[in-house]
Image (cartoon, rainbow, N blue to C red; front, side):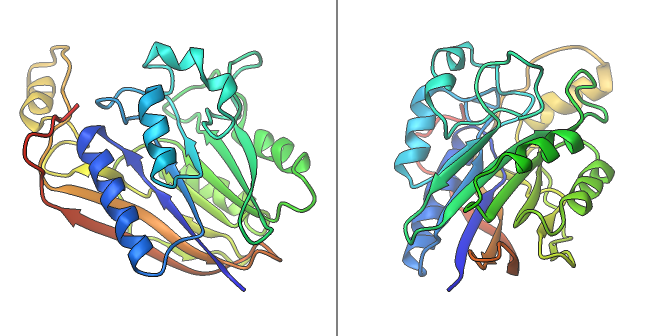
Length: 271
C-alpha cells in the first residue's frame, strides 16, 4: 500500500484559491490523493489568511494549512489559530507565539500524517529559533505511529532549504520549500527516502511579479518608492509537489512536480 500526498505552493489571492479548488477537483477525478497540505499564508489578497478562507480550504479537502512570514497579516487569525490545530505557523517562532507549528492527523486507512512548518532565517527572520534544532525537537516528540511527515520549509534562500532537506533526509517523507512563489525544477528523492523540491512555487496568476501587479512592482524597483502591489487575476496556475509514500516506513517512492493552468472566471475579484 502507498499513499499519495499533495503539497500545494503558496496560495496567492483569488486566483490562487481558484487554482487550488479546480486542481483538487481534477485530482479527485483522476484517482484521488490521500492527503493535501497547502501553504495558505497569502490567501487573503497576498497578506495572511482569514477564518473564512481556512474554512474554505478545509471544505475542499485540505488536511493541513501551513504558513510563514505573512501568517499574522490578518489580525483576526489571533482569534482562531489556537483553536484550529490544522492551521500552522512556523514551529521555530519565539516562545509564547500563538498557535502551533506541528500537528499529527489521523488519516483514513489507519496511518498518521505529521506536518511540520519551519521558517528559515537567512534573509528573513534572524530572531526565529534555529530551524535545524527546532526540527530535531519536533521530530523527537512525534507519536511513535506517525511515520509519514511532511515539512514546509518556508525560506528565502535555496541553500538553506537544501541544507534543511539533507539534514532531514531519512527522517521525514517530504521536505518542500515555499515562500519564493517560483517553482524549481529540482524535484527528487534523496538517498534516505525524503521527497524534496526547493520551492513548490505559487498557486496564483503568473502574469505578474510573484502574484502581484507587474506594473506596480516595476514602479517600485525603478523609482524606489513604497506602495502596495495588489494581487492580479487571470490564468490561475496550480503548482505543487505530489509524492507517493510508503506509510509503514515513511519513505517516498515516487515524486512528481505538478502544474495546472485554469482560465479566469467571469466577475471574480483578485483579492
